[in-house]
Length: 166
Image (cartoon, rainbow, N blue to C red; front, side, top):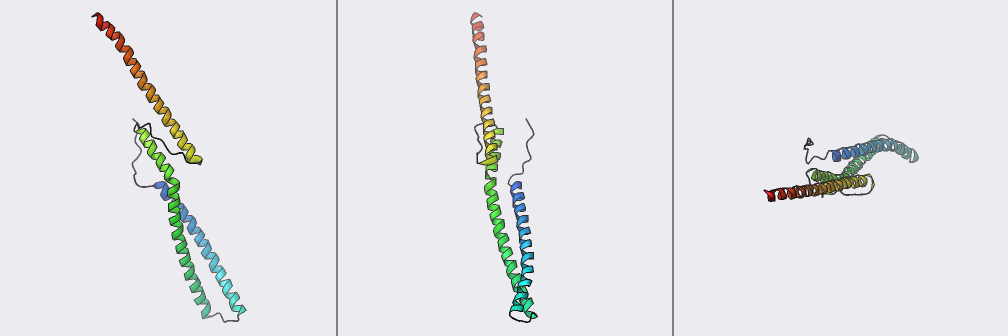
């Protein structure tokens, strides 16, 4: 029998990789937005002080601190929601892959009636081919059993005749 794959149960590596990739993208977007808004904040503050003829001494630092604090809260909430949404969506997208893994494990254990789901797209195509492979294996097993029954019958008949002569 072939070598068994390593048993790393209950640790979804692909799920973790996809979620980490989504977090990196969300972090890059958040950093870009932070950089953009802090630059715009200074320009907006300067335009307000010029328009209303206000002295930008202590007021600038208070304004900058308030805007930056609000920006950090918005970034934190957006990242938390992004991570939660990425986790939910990634799990949903990986569900057919998990079901295909279970089906192939059952087929490898000899349960040839197991079938994989066939969603749309590439995963559906993979599921269809897995199901075709399982059907072919099931047919071959049935043919093998029929051959053994036929051989057993064919061998028994001459032996019975010989036994009758003895």
